[in-house]
Length: 200
Image (cartoon, helix red, strand yellow):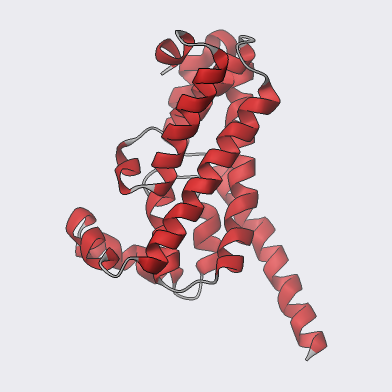
Protein backbone atom coordinates (compact mmCIF):
# COMPACT_ATOMS: atom_id res chain seq x y z
CA UNK A 1 0.00 0.00 0.00
CA UNK A 2 2.82 2.42 0.83
CA UNK A 3 4.47 1.74 -2.56
CA UNK A 4 1.20 2.49 -4.34
CA UNK A 5 0.40 5.68 -2.39
CA UNK A 6 3.98 6.97 -2.51
CA UNK A 7 3.77 7.16 -6.29
CA UNK A 8 0.95 9.70 -6.37
CA UNK A 9 0.70 13.33 -5.18
CA UNK A 10 -0.39 14.02 -1.59
CA UNK A 11 -3.87 15.44 -2.36
CA UNK A 12 -4.66 12.53 -4.67
CA UNK A 13 -3.41 10.08 -2.04
CA UNK A 14 -5.92 11.57 0.41
CA UNK A 15 -8.72 11.10 -2.12
CA UNK A 16 -7.72 7.48 -2.84
CA UNK A 17 -7.54 6.68 0.89
CA UNK A 18 -10.88 8.37 1.55
CA UNK A 19 -12.57 6.31 -1.18
CA UNK A 20 -10.99 3.06 0.08
CA UNK A 21 -11.95 3.72 3.71
CA UNK A 22 -15.50 4.74 2.83
CA UNK A 23 -15.91 1.54 0.83
CA UNK A 24 -14.23 -0.55 3.56
CA UNK A 25 -16.64 0.61 6.26
CA UNK A 26 -19.73 1.39 4.18
CA UNK A 27 -20.04 -1.19 1.40
CA UNK A 28 -20.21 -4.98 1.60
CA UNK A 29 -17.16 -5.21 -0.65
CA UNK A 30 -15.33 -3.61 2.29
CA UNK A 31 -14.85 -7.00 3.94
CA UNK A 32 -12.15 -7.62 1.31
CA UNK A 33 -10.45 -4.20 1.58
CA UNK A 34 -7.56 -3.26 3.90
CA UNK A 35 -8.78 -0.72 6.44
CA UNK A 36 -6.12 -0.53 9.13
CA UNK A 37 -3.31 -1.04 6.61
CA UNK A 38 -4.60 1.83 4.50
CA UNK A 39 -4.67 4.23 7.46
CA UNK A 40 -1.19 3.14 8.56
CA UNK A 41 0.10 3.74 5.03
CA UNK A 42 -1.44 7.21 5.02
CA UNK A 43 0.24 7.89 8.35
CA UNK A 44 3.54 6.72 6.91
CA UNK A 45 3.11 9.21 4.04
CA UNK A 46 2.45 11.92 6.61
CA UNK A 47 5.67 10.93 8.38
CA UNK A 48 7.50 11.36 5.07
CA UNK A 49 6.07 14.87 4.68
CA UNK A 50 3.84 14.00 1.70
CA UNK A 51 0.70 15.12 3.57
CA UNK A 52 0.10 16.87 6.89
CA UNK A 53 -0.46 14.54 9.85
CA UNK A 54 -3.58 16.39 11.01
CA UNK A 55 -5.04 16.30 7.48
CA UNK A 56 -4.33 12.58 7.21
CA UNK A 57 -6.10 11.93 10.54
CA UNK A 58 -9.14 14.01 9.53
CA UNK A 59 -9.31 12.28 6.14
CA UNK A 60 -9.14 8.79 7.67
CA UNK A 61 -11.65 9.60 10.40
CA UNK A 62 -14.10 11.38 8.10
CA UNK A 63 -14.09 8.66 5.45
CA UNK A 64 -14.56 5.75 7.84
CA UNK A 65 -17.22 7.58 9.89
CA UNK A 66 -19.16 8.49 6.74
CA UNK A 67 -18.85 4.91 5.53
CA UNK A 68 -20.26 3.62 8.81
CA UNK A 69 -23.16 6.09 8.55
CA UNK A 70 -23.85 4.90 5.02
CA UNK A 71 -23.81 1.28 6.18
CA UNK A 72 -26.17 2.10 9.05
CA UNK A 73 -28.75 3.75 6.77
CA UNK A 74 -28.46 0.95 4.24
CA UNK A 75 -29.24 -1.45 7.07
CA UNK A 76 -32.36 0.50 7.95
CA UNK A 77 -33.62 0.66 4.38
CA UNK A 78 -32.57 -2.66 2.93
CA UNK A 79 -35.33 -5.23 3.36
CA UNK A 80 -33.15 -7.90 1.75
CA UNK A 81 -30.25 -7.26 4.14
CA UNK A 82 -30.63 -10.39 6.24
CA UNK A 83 -30.85 -12.70 3.26
CA UNK A 84 -27.84 -11.04 1.59
CA UNK A 85 -25.65 -11.22 4.69
CA UNK A 86 -26.65 -14.80 5.51
CA UNK A 87 -25.84 -15.79 1.94
CA UNK A 88 -22.42 -14.10 2.05
CA UNK A 89 -21.29 -14.91 5.59
CA UNK A 90 -23.40 -17.85 6.76
CA UNK A 91 -26.31 -18.20 9.16
CA UNK A 92 -24.10 -18.92 12.17
CA UNK A 93 -21.88 -15.83 11.82
CA UNK A 94 -24.87 -13.62 11.17
CA UNK A 95 -26.70 -14.97 14.22
CA UNK A 96 -23.64 -14.33 16.43
CA UNK A 97 -23.31 -10.75 15.19
CA UNK A 98 -27.05 -10.15 15.59
CA UNK A 99 -27.10 -11.52 19.14
CA UNK A 100 -24.17 -9.27 20.08
CA UNK A 101 -26.38 -6.27 19.31
CA UNK A 102 -29.21 -7.60 21.46
CA UNK A 103 -28.90 -5.59 24.66
CA UNK A 104 -25.26 -4.66 24.09
CA UNK A 105 -25.53 -2.39 21.07
CA UNK A 106 -23.32 0.38 22.45
CA UNK A 107 -20.39 -1.90 23.27
CA UNK A 108 -20.73 -3.86 20.01
CA UNK A 109 -20.86 -0.75 17.82
CA UNK A 110 -17.88 0.81 19.61
CA UNK A 111 -15.70 -2.30 19.61
CA UNK A 112 -16.49 -3.19 15.98
CA UNK A 113 -14.58 -0.13 14.75
CA UNK A 114 -11.30 -1.74 15.83
CA UNK A 115 -11.66 -4.96 13.84
CA UNK A 116 -11.77 -5.74 10.13
CA UNK A 117 -14.92 -7.28 8.61
CA UNK A 118 -17.10 -6.48 11.66
CA UNK A 119 -16.33 -2.79 11.02
CA UNK A 120 -18.16 -3.32 7.72
CA UNK A 121 -21.03 -5.47 8.98
CA UNK A 122 -22.00 -4.02 12.38
CA UNK A 123 -23.27 -0.63 11.11
CA UNK A 124 -25.67 -2.44 8.76
CA UNK A 125 -26.74 -4.81 11.51
CA UNK A 126 -27.28 -1.89 13.88
CA UNK A 127 -29.52 -0.18 11.34
CA UNK A 128 -31.37 -3.43 10.67
CA UNK A 129 -31.81 -4.02 14.41
CA UNK A 130 -33.39 -0.55 14.78
CA UNK A 131 -30.64 0.85 17.00
CA UNK A 132 -31.44 4.58 17.03
CA UNK A 133 -29.27 6.80 14.86
CA UNK A 134 -28.26 8.90 17.86
CA UNK A 135 -27.12 5.84 19.84
CA UNK A 136 -25.21 4.49 16.87
CA UNK A 137 -23.48 7.81 16.17
CA UNK A 138 -22.53 8.45 19.80
CA UNK A 139 -20.93 5.01 20.01
CA UNK A 140 -19.31 4.95 16.56
CA UNK A 141 -17.93 8.44 15.91
CA UNK A 142 -15.61 8.90 18.94
CA UNK A 143 -14.09 5.44 18.48
CA UNK A 144 -13.68 6.04 14.73
CA UNK A 145 -11.81 9.26 15.56
CA UNK A 146 -9.56 7.47 18.07
CA UNK A 147 -8.96 4.55 15.69
CA UNK A 148 -8.04 6.76 12.74
CA UNK A 149 -5.85 9.15 14.76
CA UNK A 150 -4.01 6.32 16.53
CA UNK A 151 -3.21 4.50 13.29
CA UNK A 152 -2.15 7.67 11.47
CA UNK A 153 0.21 8.56 14.32
CA UNK A 154 1.58 5.01 14.47
CA UNK A 155 2.25 5.14 10.74
CA UNK A 156 3.83 8.59 10.94
CA UNK A 157 6.12 7.63 13.82
CA UNK A 158 7.03 4.17 12.55
CA UNK A 159 9.71 5.32 10.08
CA UNK A 160 11.87 2.38 9.02
CA UNK A 161 9.96 0.09 11.37
CA UNK A 162 6.76 0.50 9.31
CA UNK A 163 6.60 -3.15 8.24
CA UNK A 164 6.88 -4.39 11.83
CA UNK A 165 4.23 -1.92 13.03
CA UNK A 166 1.88 -2.97 10.24
CA UNK A 167 2.34 -6.65 11.06
CA UNK A 168 1.76 -6.03 14.77
CA UNK A 169 -1.41 -4.03 14.18
CA UNK A 170 -2.67 -6.71 11.81
CA UNK A 171 -2.14 -9.41 14.42
CA UNK A 172 -3.51 -7.53 17.41
CA UNK A 173 -6.36 -5.63 15.78
CA UNK A 174 -5.76 -2.82 18.25
CA UNK A 175 -7.41 -4.65 21.17
CA UNK A 176 -6.26 -2.02 23.64
CA UNK A 177 -8.09 0.63 21.70
CA UNK A 178 -11.17 -1.57 21.70
CA UNK A 179 -10.95 -2.11 25.46
CA UNK A 180 -10.46 1.61 26.04
CA UNK A 181 -13.47 2.41 23.88
CA UNK A 182 -15.61 -0.10 25.74
CA UNK A 183 -14.57 1.36 29.10
CA UNK A 184 -15.31 4.91 27.98
CA UNK A 185 -18.71 3.89 26.66
CA UNK A 186 -19.51 1.90 29.79
CA UNK A 187 -18.77 4.93 31.97
CA UNK A 188 -20.84 7.17 29.70
CA UNK A 189 -23.75 4.72 29.69
CA UNK A 190 -23.77 4.35 33.47
CA UNK A 191 -23.75 8.12 33.93
CA UNK A 192 -26.52 8.50 31.38
CA UNK A 193 -28.70 5.93 33.14
CA UNK A 194 -28.07 7.64 36.47
CA UNK A 195 -29.13 11.01 35.02
CA UNK A 196 -32.27 9.51 33.51
CA UNK A 197 -33.22 7.94 36.84
CA UNK A 198 -32.73 11.24 38.61
CA UNK A 199 -34.97 13.03 36.09
CA UNK A 200 -37.72 10.43 36.38
